[in-house]
Image (cartoon, rainbow, N blue to C red; front, side, top):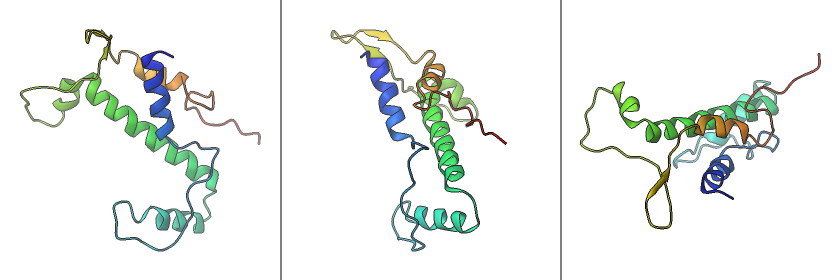
Amino acid sequence: MTTRDALIKCLWHVIHDETKPLPSHSEKVIQAPLGDAEALTAKIVKAGIPMADIARLVKIFQFEAVMGVLQCFSDPEGSLSDLDIEVDDIWAIVQCNEEGEVSGDLSGIFESMLSADPTGREMRPRLTSR
């Protein structure tokens, strides 16, 4: 497996698999970081939204978040231009060979992430028969 493929597989691992159930839906809010996630899910389910729709929306938001982070690393100057701030240095993710020499970058990562969607749909909606 190439380094790029390993990165893509790792990134997809942190994005929710829409075919699997979300965590339980307790209405209790826990005073901890993200402690209201289950209560918010329970509220949405109670409103009649199908769990499959909620899971799909979670996957979309997580994919967008991952892609946003990758955009910050692949085009840091462009990503900072909207923020009206200046920095001395920039961060970057690059692929290096065993000698530590740069051998690749994040070019085409968006397309690679789409084509690696475990559903095979490249983040497109599931076709429904009506």
